[in-house]
Image (cartoon, rainbow, N blue to C red; front, side, top):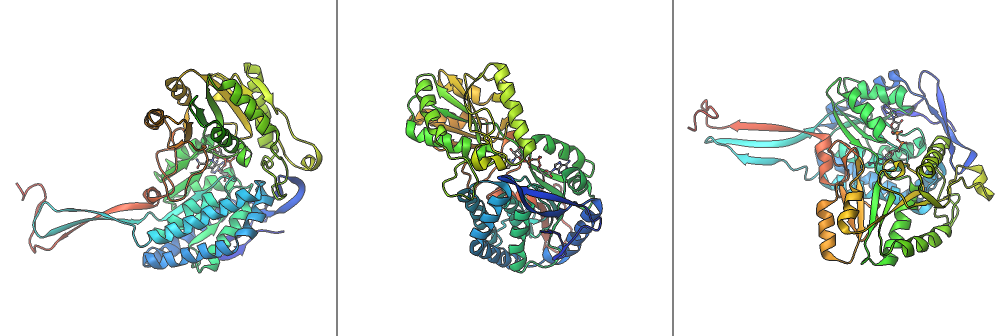
Length: 493
Ligand code: NAD
């Protein structure tokens, strides 16, 4: 199938004629389609279209923009199953998860549509008589949106829908591993009545078209989700034009299990957090920090549960663990498993590719558990982004939190405990953007702030009301109705 870019509401090929292929990670013979391999010229055309459309879109009454976004939510709801199926085929996670991915976009659509009747400003009294002070949010302008492949609809929706609600126009560069899902999502917005030029898509690779978007002087903000390495590169490049950059980057998330925890609950949480989405989530549990009193029993129970996980094609009923996205990523996992073994951690489960039966056709890796991991090991510090769990032993809550905090990342953390004092101490002392108590490290809700500290980002928060800080500028307005010249800081003394 020949897929295209979107420019001014028309699906077009790249004039360069270059394309790239996208394959089903569960079946390498299954080609999803050929997509335009866009370059700086395609990016420039898309930015020009978005800049032209901004003139009309930014002054449309916000609730009218909201009507279109709400309709897009309705259309996504109607097409949920179709999009989920296409997404599983394209990027592998089981259908139950891809349905959740689309649902997150639906929730975000309704939330963003509702916000178009709010978009609150902040006002304060004037220090002078007969004068009114206001501060209002205005759209930031043309937004460059660059996303990772693991949430092909949800993550773009977190950025695109609030950005549109706030009156911005967009150039969207989806991940090269999930471009078809991106097209399906955007089609829902077109069907809902989005005017030409408001949202444009350029498909392609990071260095060739992502970079051009980051460097483009007429783009006002880059909202990026991806790896910390690429995020740093983007921040450096974007600084040349002083545009705003919002970075949602990697994680090395941990789940603490205290000796007073509900063990069954903690076990369910660890299974879902570590091996859901084959561990390919920014919020995946890649470290399990166990109190010494329950260390051995918990590990034994975990091994017995993980052994039973069903690996395979995400479109087959009952599949719990889908494929890894591509050969490069599976080699990265293999690399870290070698490092773990070299460092002296003990691999008690998995540790190699799954090639049996149908799995021989795709990129599958066995759920893997390392025990006796220590905080200084690389498998305890660096993001693997795969089904690999590093288990560590601690002697107290303070010790657990110290170990949890000992990485460069700070996205999502979890603690299982029945003790209320432990819970609140953890909420206070854990260094991460999200803390879960008695639930796993995955499970963010669309209407709450989402993001992390340290090298997980640069201080922005998507989701909820905080996303509007990324996609708006504050404009301060003074209205003097006294009919005379009044001088601030001078006349009121
Ligand atoms: P990646 O950084 O390789 O790619 C992400 C996007 O950046 C892709 O669209 C890619 O084409 C683009 N890109 C690559 N090089 C670029 C460049 N030089 N200039 C501009 N764009 C460029 O990440 P990935 O492998 O797609 O995704 C996995 C990573 O994403 C993990 O680190 C994961 O933790 C992170 N992630 C973070 C969040 C979050 O919200 N914090 C959510 C999902 C994934």
